[in-house]
Length: 325
Image 1 (cartoon, rainbow, N blue to C red):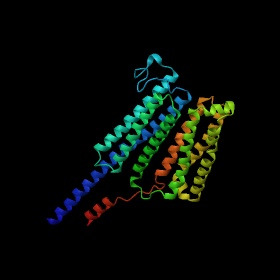
Image 2 (image 1 turned 60 degrees about the vertical axis):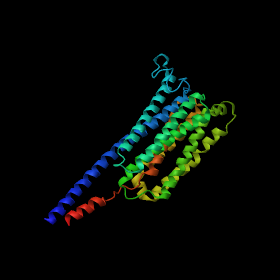
Image 3 (image 1 turned 90 degrees about the vertical axis):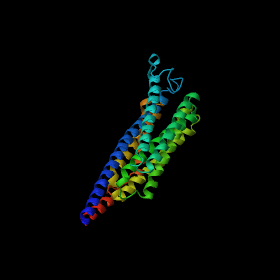
Image 4 (image 1 turned 30 degrees about the vertical axis):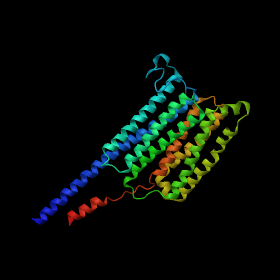
């Protein structure tokens, strides 16, 4: 009788553990899917913002947060108004999505990792700051500093969102990325963020047009071009290291090959933009899109585990051993 009661308790405990693991898996799956949508929405937001800047549509809607006093300004709609209006709409949807994830993390805080609600609160804070700078770009009439900070916060949102996604994916990974591998990847990420900062200053101060037209104020443009060399070198160093450490190449070849493609296409788009005297918006917008994808891939490589071996579920194993005994 005692043996049967002990066995029944172990079976009930095992069933409870199974159900608990299934619930946690379900909740984390939901956050992973929402995170993937957030990444796409943020990249779209950055690209549309770049298109708005290139098409000189930043002040197409003279008020904020509405546009000509309405949510949908049919009577004033043209390409520039549409770009600025759609940029704001995408920013609003991104904000709602992040607020929704934060709310779910509070509701399900007992079923998810402890770090998740805290990280989502940081993400929500960045969204509020981003929206504030979005308003300031209109109020300050596209002040160069405000526009630059607005873009950099968007990149921070993208990096934070991807880091959350990868940490969720790494929840059952046995090996963490080596510190030296992460540092090696962090170098081109930091350089790309700096180059993006210079690029926004270049466009928001009209320094590129002044340099190309009058050969004056070329320091910013030349600095932007020079940064392509250390970024290229750092990426080639990463590829060479991955080839030397074959397991890194085997597990990350898709990301690394994408990185090489984005690097060289970014250089080509930059050269084409200069060759056309920045008169072809498609090249400049493509340049911005490539930069966003470049940052996204580097961030993914930094935070993802380069190895796919799963952790054995010790809790389940111990329960099984107990039942078998």
